[in-house]
Length: 396
Image 1 (spheres, one colour):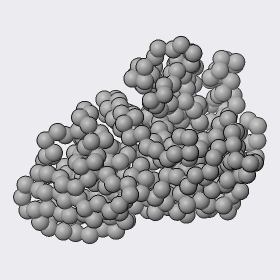
Image 2 (cartoon, helix red, strand yellow; image 1 turned 180 degrees about the vertical axis):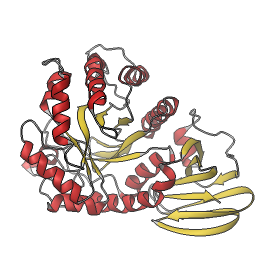
Image 3 (spheres, one colour; image 1 turned 90 degrees about the horizontal axis):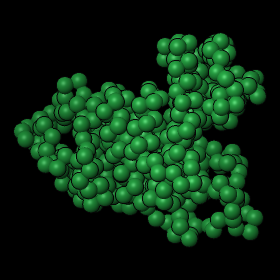
């Protein structure tokens, strides 16, 4: 209970990939659901039956799906079924079958959850074959066309260590963010993105070298802020809890501090504090951003160089009342209730940034920064932003 309570205090409101499995340990799932209700957290349940159907090992039975959902639906925290993490194209037909049956028997509001592969420079076989030739664009397009999901979720981790050196690949990051944003917009569905809580996803269990734990605070907030500026409707954190093998370091040492909001030893890591601060800010801007339509981004300074001329970039730098932007920034341009809303992300990850928004006339506006709202009036507004920080400006 103490762990779920800490998650609630952090502002986490959804568990998308729980450890408990309803088929293997129903009482554990029931307990989790009761605690999630207490601390206002939604819960996607896992069930081995859906894994077997997905793998083609068992036929889908509509009555069985209805019975599983019926049992779990007795708990208000239940929001749906986790079906598959990073599915490849040969199994899309199985995923479609599960979705079709699920939505035909589930009550309104319940969802299935699947998370897509990212786009990385080193390449991924999206069709699951060693010599596959399915491009990332084809992968995403087929997923939307064949599965008809209610939302798009994907994970892309921009911060990495290579031969003990910390580095950032912003080109792939923005290419991936750009494509998902575009496909979500075209199909009128929201998209969710993962934010990186630590590094070294040690799936192979190797003894990885020790370097300073990353991402740093400015990196973490930049990860959140740029996604919000692009119109993301869901911010997810990986990993919530560190897997023990992720902690394996040199000379048999276990480094519990290198990733996870919580280490495998159960203690909160620095990203827990970062996420708590970020979530408080997200709650303060959520009413606007969750109901606003992203119509593109204005990019300046270092961000303009990193993003380039992608389809979402407003080349003129002007958007309705917004006449120009100076500084280093990614400015998400939104329509909200007939008004212009601008989400300003500091493009600098290591130092403060001063960003000025210039308007075409005198306007009243509100600014939400660090979960606090202030009012202003003028032909411009200047924001002093911490490394990677974001702020919302709404023209009244």
